[in-house]
Image (tube, rainbow, N blue to C red):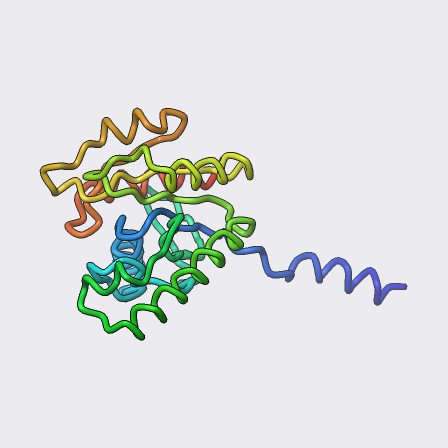
Length: 208
């Protein structure tokens, strides 16, 4: 009996706390992995993954565990999950434009399709999600609306990033108008512009 009580008591103390999972979601080439690399460089001193101009460079879920974000005397520990870009259609012929051979293009399309399915499956494990959008592009797309709709249906806390603000065509107001129910932060993940504001907002979204 005493053994059972001991086991229950100490088991409760030493049981590993569930790690807070922060997911990066969005369409291809929005800058998810660039942002993931920036976060990892700032807090771990290493990169998350490879970045490319070719869509669907990230075709598998990538995870960095135990990132400790420190800001204004506060700490947030989380596992960062960088997901493949979500698209409603993947055509291998699109990859041919970037100089890939047909066999390689078909393989990439297959891997990208699997990556999208995995991304959607992983949504159920997320404690909060950062949706990374290219602020130079129209935010009113079927893909973006589908992603946001899925997050709303699951009641997952969301922060929207309008990325690539270093480019002239960037229009944060348009992103804000598209999704007024969420906080939108304009950043340049590549240049590090306004990333401190992004870190401030991460603390807020993690407490929702």
